[in-house]
Image (cartoon, rainbow, N blue to C red):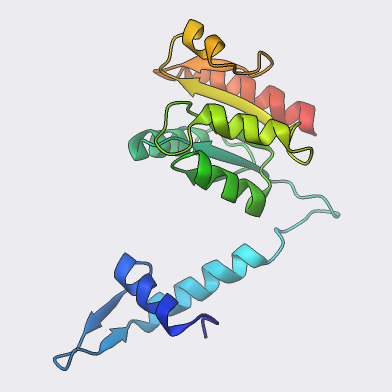
Amino acid sequence: MLGVSHRTVQLWVESGVLQAWKTAGGHRRIALASVNRLVDQRSHAIQPPPAHDGVSLERKVLLVDDDSTMLRLYELEIGGWDLPLDVIKAGNGFEALIKIGEAKPDLLISDLSMPGMDGFRMIRTLRADPAYSGMAIIVISGLDRATIKSMGLPEDIPVFSKPVPFVELRKAVDQVLTKAA
């Protein structure tokens, strides 16, 4: 049903992706509802998004921050804007680059200070790749402007300070999406 190896299923059970329990004999039993949910999620991921006259109405926005609470706050706020946005989340620059390759978002909203690959390196990597060099990017950071400038962030990228001014962020998102359309 899942089309993956036995070990992948074991890892999914161990990480909580699939709900399962162990029998008295030590064997795993996986809830069928959990398997069906995962199959549905995977089929949505590989099917193209619904289109209207050949053009998708929904824009993809990738949110990147190492603070899961901030990611949830962004997701809730953006979800309340009543815009046709599909929100994707990543916890660091490396994970974001993978999601960018998979989902090809229209807009990247990112923090700069993150463990692993930080936002500066992620943005440099994107700008160096011709396929993503023109991607719309908005930065939200707790760093001061002088530090951001000294680290070499391109000047064409809008930067918002934390705490996030959501009214201004929405204007910037509207502007980016209008320009992309």
